[in-house]
Length: 406
Image (cartoon, rainbow, N blue to C red):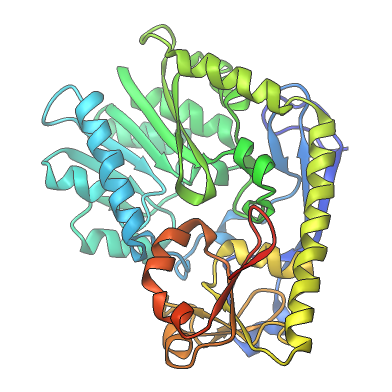
């Protein structure tokens, strides 16, 4: 029986997705035989309410010099992080020369807003290729994994920070106690922590099981984040729901008793109680919903192919790896996956080895159907792809239900 990474309580996994490859591990034919797989199991801790995967691959297997995700490829995300930065500058930074640190800063998409405003800043990004892109964009970045030891080095070199930020990164890290101790050391007494990650409440309500993959060691809730930071004498002072990544929550945290606690915290604690995030029965219901969605999607794809129609995957996302491998989707059902990221093109999807082709293969010769793997960017994609629909193309969605957009 595994023990919780946060509070060491023993728990039983409630769901296994079977053997999974590295979600962002797009590969060449020569790499097929050496591909790494692990069992993707998910568990719920009844004590601290943390939902977590049981085993996570070594971090170097996921974040490295060929990391296949650049945040700045989405215009909507550029706008989102610009607004994120403006919120921090307006509400939380004490001066025009404050020091801001971002964990998992990727290609500098958010920190460049602070750099442009003249703030002292530092990005911490362990994937060398995206860290290099950030440096080329004028964002001060170090290519390392963050922990308590690195926090000491940063304080010695730069001093303490006014704000410590993160977006879609805290949930990636299994050793959160070292992270929080590092944040506590790095943060000024009146400083603020602000980070956002996919929200457990949305995952349960939408059955968005594609949020579960190797990089996501945890699915956070207001309950579990409050519990974690309380263990380190820090306090959750506000929460703000976000629409990004299919439903996220932004958590605002400070040193204990340094800031007043917003009524939003209690409001969402009550919402989570009503949703049943503290009951194992909720997660068995989620498991049943996952199995139903799996069967619905496979049956739909099979019916479409029986009619002689073509289907392409749209966007070779990390999320798609869970969907494809859990559902057993193969190249017999999905002709190819199109993507705009050069590092993924002319490779094959993790596990199922479906060809990944340049976006132009899609736009130059539309398929009959497109399975939308980047549903969290649906609004942006739909505006871009009106010609596909005008010429008779149909979208297949799988969140929050399996359906064809007519």
